[in-house]
Length: 194
Image 1 (tube, rainbow, N blue to C red):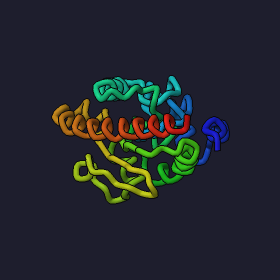
Image 2 (image 1 turned 30 degrees about the vertical axis):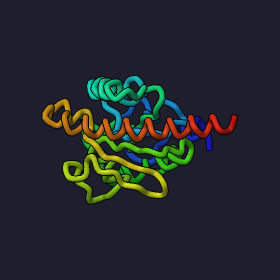
Image 3 (image 1 turned 90 degrees about the vertical axis):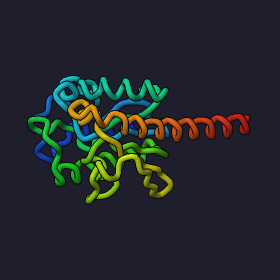
Image 4 (image 1 turned 135 degrees about the vertical axis):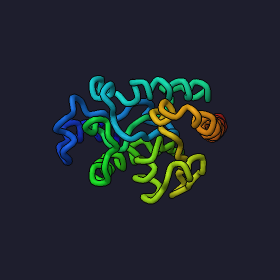
């Protein structure tokens, strides 16, 4: 399934009440063939205005973290668990996440990432474990159906709690190493096919 078709199918989604307050739906952006996908909570005010994920202050911090880890933002795919901004930037509730997971599943099928990074508690609970506490599970890889997943702190959390940046950097080093290993493996396979 093509990612663009997924986006077109859901661009006018009204499956939950979050659509009532949105300016723009924020499906995600980046490389539709990337082995690495980041999943955040939901769009904030800047994202809602621009229709792009992670463009506000938290997005700027994410960009710096990616740059420090030598992972080009344009090489990966970034999305959120919910595609419309929750009122007042609150955390999405379970029903909203469950409703939006249909779209996220189709994005997974289209992109076929081998690594998924969940940014914060909400996507970690929605994708990895409904009982997960981000402070306990961050930095620990989980594997399902050949896909490795790593929960880490959301950049917005790090803006409020700078002391967590050291742990987040440890996570990003793991992400960098796993991503670079996948890229090297792909390059080796491509060379052998020539």
